[in-house]
Image (cartoon, rainbow, N blue to C red; front, side, top):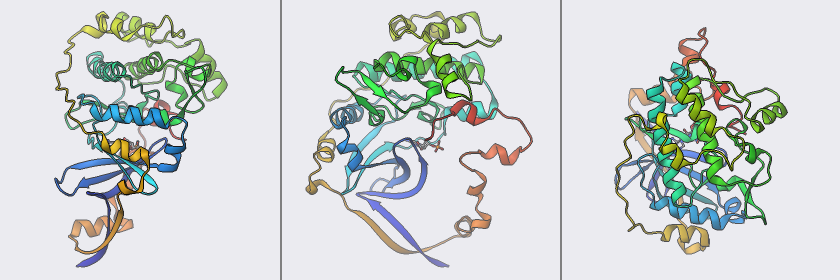
Length: 357
Ligand code: 3AM
């Protein structure tokens, strides 16, 4: 049986299905046609990026991210520009999002949460040491690979939704209020490092508690709770975990615990193995320069190829809407809704609230 199949190419990548839509970009699955390697393509609107007041900072951060090869940071392979779009080619991470574990199985044991938190702090510490701040750490940026290693995504890209004003500090009007630090929400400018750390504290709380530390259906009440760090630790938390969370969720960024202090914390240190990885500085940054220069000579062409392809029975079934198994795995509801419609799992919305605009 033969059917027309449209293949879309961006440079050497064959573009596949849409994986999801983030705050400022669409993410698509793609395959390197030379090596067969799967990648994730983050697709940005060129106009928006180049006209952005922070284009220079975004360029610097993307260039830095290309140099980073940390086991807990999603690899950025290269950047490609077409006439209208910027394609960021990323390591394809297969294990889904960390928070799906909480949604599916509830809160974690302290040992398991500690291991993920250690990996998160390692990633954040490493990027901060290279002058890159995340500024939007939240569940959808915490991915897992096939071996359950944590991979933080979007480092160096979140500057797209930020503004730097004359005071040199960052200002934000959007973001994820549940994970955002008080100084980010009150918009008097903030330091990327201490703000990232606050979000790590919220993430640790959710891993251990199974619900958000700050939550309210009324946005003003939510802001109030965050600004004074009004939260209650669940009774099952150990004293040392509670102590660490309280030191991170300090509403005053000046007195909030720092990463060097976290590395010395008793709860954090248990079973801690610093990551082992190779640093390479032979990476070519010409692609980043070319994309941001916006000169036509460097544009790749986006090609659409119509190809008659032979389909097997499985492909035929998955093409048919009525029988598409993919429909069961609805992005918002999750497969558990279908499998156990009457069971009261922790609602994904409760821990990822406001993440999508
Ligand atoms: O739309 P959902 O939340 O299912 O997990 C990310 C999110 O999925 C996924 O793309 C969506 C929009 O951000 N994603 C982002 N980067 C990815 C990567 N490098 C990724 N999935 C796999 N590999």
